[in-house]
Length: 159
Image 1 (cartoon, rainbow, N blue to C red):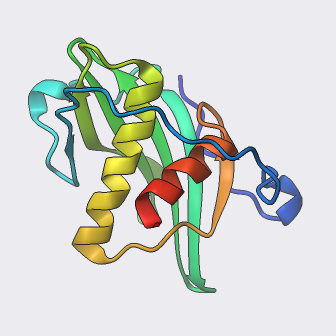
Image 2 (cartoon, rainbow, N blue to C red; image 1 turned 30 degrees about the horizontal axis):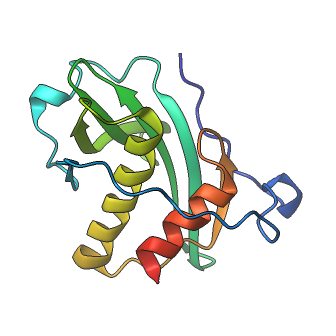
């Protein structure tokens, strides 16, 4: 079972973000026929229940004001035919974390690391075009993707 994301409550709980290796990603696999966006993932790619044993990629946070923020934990699920990018969001009404499928790409010819990096990259690009999303303010947790990899994705998206 997947643990709920941990939300850091002090700067000492954050991973090191000021000093990190500068990485450049390899070229995007071709073809990389991904679909990203809220509600856009076809039902054929989504498991009937919540994803079973997804890989926890990272959790990033935007903090625009003390009462206006966004915490986004991202996961990658290996389906039969697709890699599926998931977002978990906290539901204040029910006090639980909800799963949202926000992107997918066929598995053929795409490694797990490529799917994780490029689906996250494409989702953030989509959110820039859809709602003007700015770069995250910090990384709360780095799991599968390192801080250096996340910063490389951010440079590719927001530069």
